[in-house]
Amino acid sequence: MVRKYIALLRMKYIEMLAYRLATFVWMTGAITQPLITMFVWMNIHPEESESFLFYFMAVIFVERMTSAWDVWELDREIREGTFSNLLLRPLHPIHWAIAENIVYKWLFLVILVPVWMVGAVYWPALRPHMTGSQIGWFLAAVVLSAALRFLLSYSCGLLAFWVTKVAAVYGVIDVISLFLSGRIAPLEMLPPQLREWSEWLPFRYMISFPIEIATGAVRAEELVRGFAIAAGWLLVLAAVLQWLWKAGMKKNQAVGG
Amino acid sequence: MRRYGRVFREFFRACFVEEMEYRSEFFGNFAASFFGVGMALLTVHIFFYQTDDLGGWTYAEVLVLLGIFNMLRGFIDFALRPNMPRLLEHVRRGTLDYILTKPVDSMFYVSFRHLVFWRLIDVALGLGVIGYGLYIERYVPSAVDVLMFLVVMAASLLLIYSLWMMLMTTSFWVVRIDDLSFIFDSFFETARFPGSMYRGAVRMVITYVLPAVLITNTPALALLGKWSVSTVLAALAVAILFLWLARRFWRFALRFYTGAGG
Picture (spheres, rainbow over the protein chains, first blue to last red):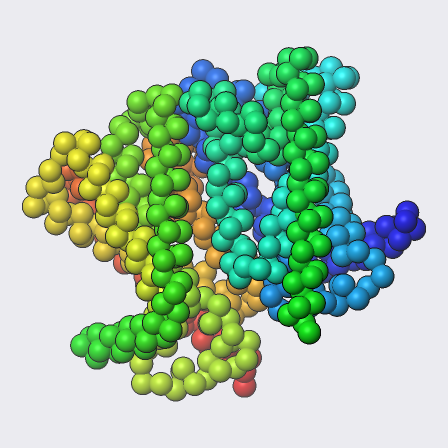
């Protein structure tokens, strides 16, 4: 398995190099929404500008490190029928997707960490104040976020076996997650009702949770609870994905004849 | 000029016939537009949960601004966005030759040939949001306000058209056009909020270099009765300047095209 993954990663790495410009454009495009939101909050609470700067830069970082666009890939592949090529290969298609995600996230990490370090030289607000265990929890939470978003994206993509407008379905989920994952506002700024929902829904654990750990907003007992809820959603989404996969395979053969 | 009116009506009719083949999608599109506006309103609501003033604008004024933003985006998606990938195809496959030989202006043709009607729902919803904002503000625009609003709105549409056209013209050199419209969208997204909210260099750029602020803020202010003759004239002047630039750029690109296509 390890050798297979090394081969997969190498392939995906070469593929990525072919699309350097596109990758760069998508990367710069993804930062405008958090930046605009940051300006709004700095305007509302000017005295907390520094913490908003840290928060929204962290949003950009975590968002890039966890985003998965498998839903669009799957949608296209299933609709156009090229998905069958992947099915014929001896390895489950999900491994290709996982390898691709690892490669892109590695690229983003290699670019964003030095950018952050240079930024921290100029803006003291960007210097993180984290203890060793906090860093550990933060990294664990980022990995968990990435896994959650990947499972959600891939499961939605599998819906393409039944629905033609998967991208629209995912779009709706994404907009809802804008509010509940902490991208429109730090969750503590939300009205109490929405904040309560955000605790139990998976979206908080897709972006906000790691940042809350980094800023020290999460206390020890909340930390355990947060990880427990996130892990619960991880199991649920994995089960959903497996079920969709099985049902989709049956459906796929029925259509393919 | 009258001939162009007739040609545009003919484009309109052809696209309408085309669209009627997909009538079943109407409801889904309608729901999607409603959802989009609802979420935009919720966003503004969440911001104003913490404050009652954003860069000197009240809740109701920001709603008027949001309505105008939604309207303009509706116009972009109605007339401009559908044409961008087509121009790319024409350039790549050399079929632009056919357009150049037609007895209509090529820039006019490539930018308005394809229209997506259901996007006009966004324009209507935008008008609704504007009305709602004015209602909360308890402000009834006077006839002069409306006149000024119409003038500035026309300038904004011209500006958007010119910026979009310049971006589209780069397809003679750049191949990945979906990335380009992505750049425009992220820039236009800044126009959703009052320009006075931004700080420092960002504010300078979106006010003077890429006039995003001018495009949405001046019509909103005009409708709220906060216009001045000088800003209206400035908006018109900037719009005409950008249109001229876009025109020049298109001509320049065409020269490049014939050079390459042989």
